[in-house]
Each structure stands twice: as C-alpha cells, then as structure tokens.
Length: 199
Image (tube, rainbow, N blue to C red; front, side, top):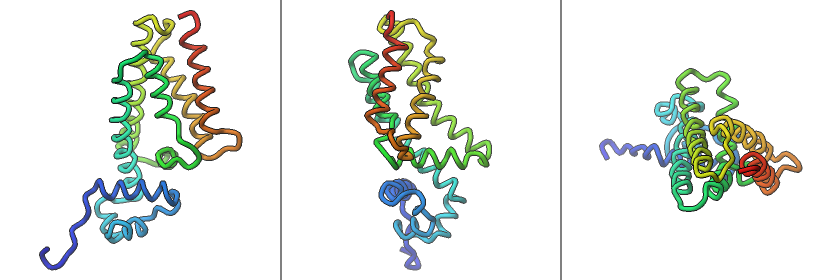
C-alpha cells in the first residue's frame, strides 16, 4: 500500500461489526471510538464515511433489514397455506427476546427520528413499507383463496403491525411478564379471531 496506509474495511464489514457490537455489548457501548477499534479505523475516519452516529445507526438498520428482507422473501415464497406463511412472517417480525439487537437498533432509530431530517424519515418509511407491502399481499392472497374471511388487507395489516410493534417493544425492552412465547400466542389469537372466523 502506498505510504503504508491501511485501507478502510468495506462498508458492509463496518455495519456487520456495528450490529455484532450491539448484540454482544448493547447499544450504549457502540461509540465511534469503540467501533473504530473493532474495525481498525479511527473515529475520525468513521465520521468521514458516516457523518454522524445517527447515520451510522440508520445505515446499520438498512443493512440488517436488507438481510431480513431476503429471509422474508424466502419464507413468503414457500409453498403452503397463507396462514402458515403468515405465522412465519410473525415469527420473523417478533424479537427473539430482551435486547434483541435488531429491535434494539430499531428502537434507537425511532427515538432519534424525532430530530431526523426528511431523508432519514423517508428511508425509515421505506423499510417499514417493505414489511407492510409483503403483509398486505399475503393477507390479500389468503382472502382471494377463501382461506381468510373478506377483510380489507391494508387495514388489517396496519392493525396487525401496530399490535406486533407494541408487543415487540415490550419484549425487546424486557418488560416483566412480556416474553416471546406469550406475544406469539396473543398475535395468533388475534389472527384466528380476525381472519379465520366465518372464513
């Protein structure tokens, strides 16, 4: 290398390291300096590439969501009933437990979005929009096949995602009495009552 300078690691390696740090140590330990030590860059170099911690967090979320989007497409593309695939969607959506790294990151991005610019808000909306569109399409498919009762797919998806978001926040922050198994039970009961009754 010219001048003995070390080349910066690829962007994806930095984002993967950030996500791993969140998973292992929690979001409060993710500083530019700590991440820089992890990937062999100075905090100044990280700021040059990402401009702010808010941007680093948002890009890490986008990277993580891209991976989840691939998994979601795989699950929704499987053969089987719409309800089986809907259960798989819910399973992927709900956090694994207290301090789930993906949900920890989402909560921080949501918290910071109060002061975010329009570009950041649009990027968050794009992530949420992808989840919503897939859910609407799946519910519409179940309705068209007579597997679900005739609900408005967009309206039902909006209510379902709000329910899952509320429960998921409780699980991710470790609210006493809120665990993944209970949440999945509540959501499946909501699906039975809302989609299967009189189908």
